[in-house]
Length: 200
Image 1 (cartoon, rainbow, N blue to C red):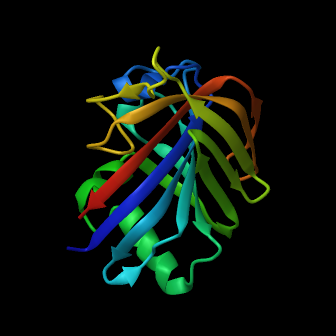
Image 2: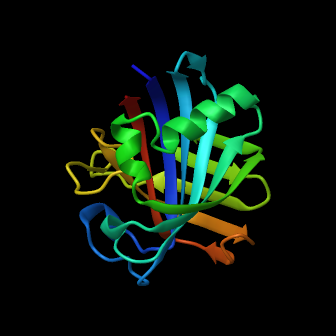
Image 3: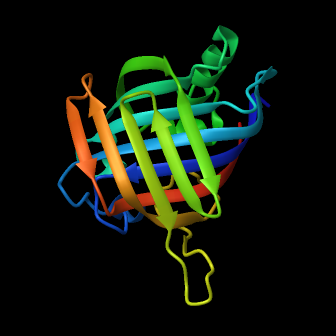
């Protein structure tokens, strides 16, 4: 087995809530600009321990998510050494098979790989993400009548296949990215939280 990874995700985009991509519909704006961050609580990739590290991706999705062809910038936790960086890029780049290979197929071009500080926190349902000086988001899940977190299950597209997604709303979503030409500052847009376990 090449990798076993467990942890949490925070995801945010410029679509309205709820996220149309997860159910195979076109993005609200015709295109979608999204950030997803994977924080690995426990994990190894080809024997390399990557526990405690975070990897994130800023992506421009040109149309329906199922058509792929994303243009992306990959962000690597600056706490990672070169061996860990190589392992993370191999796994999340789809080179080691499994569910990460399936997800990597939607990325048409990775235009930059950046090592930077990544702050990732989830406390009592409130998720906060900060990637260097380029991006930040604050989000909180929707809850049902009795306070239980609202979940999305069995969707046609998922960044955490096999796990329920916690449908959320971002009170803040800011991106300034020269490589992708993005300058975003929004409130009240789509977000997703969740947990993952990937094996490949």
